[in-house]
Amino acid sequence: MTALEIASYLKNHPEFFEEFAEVLTDIYLPHPHGDRAISLSERQILTLREKNTLLENRLRDLIQFGEENDTISEKLHQFTLALFPPRTLESSLDVIKSNLRDIFDIPHAAVRIWTGQPDTPGLAEFSGVGMDICAFAGELAHPQCGVTVPDEVSTWFGDTADKLRSFALVALREEEAYGLLVLASEAEHRFFANMGTLYLKRLGDLVGAALTRHLADETIPA
Image (cartoon, helix red, strand yellow):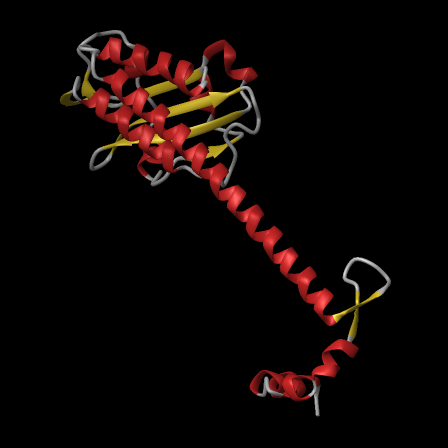
C-alpha cells in the first residue's frame, strides 16, 4: 500500500485505533523544532499549540486593524464636521488644508480645479492645468500612491517640492473628473504603491463635495 492509501484507510476506519490502541503509544515522531523523538500525542499537542498561536496572532491583527479603522473613521468624522461652516470657496480651501494638517498630519496638499467658476478670483487652485493632467485625472478610477508625480504636479508645491518623497493623487469627480487633490509627505513610506485607498477615496469625496457647492457650472480654460 502507498502512503496515501494508508492515510485514506485510517481516515475511513477510525475504529482501527480502538482495536490497536497500543499502536498510538508506540509511535514516535521527530520533534518539529529539535532532534529528539516525541510521541504522537505530544506531537498533536504541539500542533494544536501552533494552531492556537496562529489564531491568536490573526485575532491580534484583526483587533489592531479594527482599532486603526476606528481611529481613521473618527478623523474622517472630525474632518467632515469641519467642512460645514465655511461659506466661501477660499475659506473652504483653507479649512481643508488646515484640517488635513491638524487631523491627518498631512502638511502638504494641493488642489487644482478646471471646471466651474470660483466665487473668489485669483485663487491658485484655478490657475489652469495642462490637458495631460485633466486626462490623467479622468482615468484615475482610484487614488494613486507612490514616490513620483507628473512634473506639472510637482510645481504646485513651490519651493517644498524637492523635499517631498511620497504622494497620493485623488481625482475630484461628479460624473466626470473636474479636479485633482494631491497629498504629499516628506516621508517616503507615508503614501506607497499598493496601499489601501478606501479612506483616501472617501477623503476625496468629502473634499469634492465641500468645493463643488461654491462653483458655477462653467468651464475654466487650461
